[in-house]
Amino acid sequence: MIEENGQQPQIYGFFSGNILKLVACAAMLTDHIGMIFFPSVVLLRIIGRLAMPLFAFTVAEGFYYTRRKTVHLIVMLAIGAAVSAVFSFAEKRLHFDILITFSLSALIVYALHNLKRCAFDRKGADAAVAAFALAAAVELAIFVCLNAKVEYGIAGVMLPVTVRLTDFRRYGAQGILAAADNFPARVACFTLGLCAVSFSLGSVQWFCLFAMPFVAMYNGKRGKARLKYFFYIFYVGHFILLGAVYAAIHPDAVQAVLGI
Image 1 (cartoon, rainbow, N blue to C red):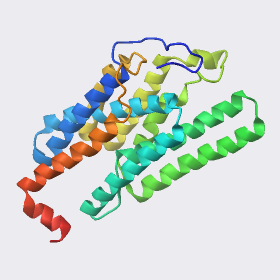
Image 2 (cartoon, helix red, strand yellow):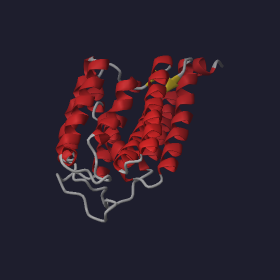
Image 3 (cartoon, rainbow, N blue to C red):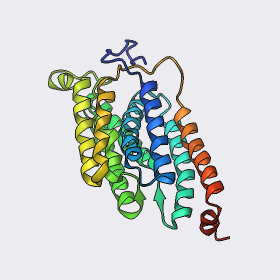
């Protein structure tokens, strides 16, 4: 990854963004295997708690580095809507999956980015409009979370936002703001956000804090391979695979859901 000023970001650890995503994918697959086939094996669900925090953190990094923000949001929203439609049909109620959660996060982060940019450019009128847009994005997220089942709720929506709260790298911050603009501060905010997620959901969700050593060892780099869309392919693909296996093992249950 390269900053907008052309400089390489500081190295903090030895896990690239790609490594974090791969660990998250493995944890997610383990979690869903446990949820679908071995619901009584708690260990599989505990391992699965690593997935959401790692995805949230890497998604937040993607919000920062991507130059095609609109395309990024549309892709995430479209795939999330497709998966959510299947979930909603199966559960007979409106169910928004994690990509919808992160899409709401993206709206808030992009609005926050615009507010920071306007504020540091000293564009008062534009900053006022940006502040209104940020408030509207937060209100939309709260409204959706209150009126539908959104995975991880409003705490999950705000989790990627915490990574960007103290981030002023693009804006020429000086003094105390520049001092706050460092990786430990971003990790600290993310940890607090993760505690809020764990507190809101309780029980086994507290094991998601075991993802923090991985986050703390992030080196600020993407990694050599371009895996930008790998997560989306894996996300949809693993559901199709697990669904096919489940349908083969439990055809009666699938027929009941389909009303056959």
